[in-house]
Length: 282
Image (cartoon, rainbow, N blue to C red; front, top):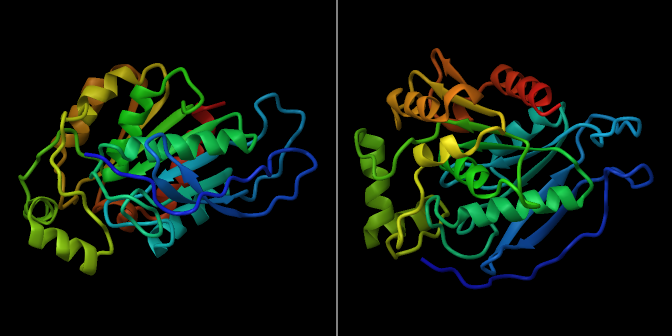
């Protein structure tokens, strides 16, 4: 699959994590490594910068939304609103979603979108980055952490919520519907006009590393896997496979009564995720 350049790209030189910069939100377009414009939002959060801390203060949370989401969706804004109590927050719209350019590759090249957002967060002066992904975004944060371990797009902790463990899963009615939307021309029309997501028509070539293949490659970066026991998309064998593959460096939270992704993640759970991230990344 391929996506060409789209949209005007503005790059900010403001560094809100410095002692003298005004702590204000920023909205801009970032250019990915393959030339896609990604609509991105920075919120400096509620945590006051502490110049005495060698780590540069509180972390920045980079939030990777689920399929058909975008940076302006109410459920994404709610996630950002809770996490901003623990640090700054970057939200963005994956390619093919919202105001971003390109077309969705349903978890493949979206790793490039996340990498651009993480680089931006570090460029704004944050020494510690936590990636938090939901559903499709949960698979993306896993693959991103495995592929960017030693460069400027690296992350210091990873939280994957409601993610699949393997590709091409069709074991639930909702996943069979999603596959129809992604693979059929009429389904892609429904995606475009019904869900505001522009889906690429080409199959994966090559097939990207799966989440369960990525999980063991993340160590020693701390990893948290969160999944609800009422998830209608992916049953509990998915988080258990991810945790088993990751080994001792991963924490697994199976949440009673929780459904799928951002809409099902309550404020209390998001607050626990914030606490976990602050603790794990120092």
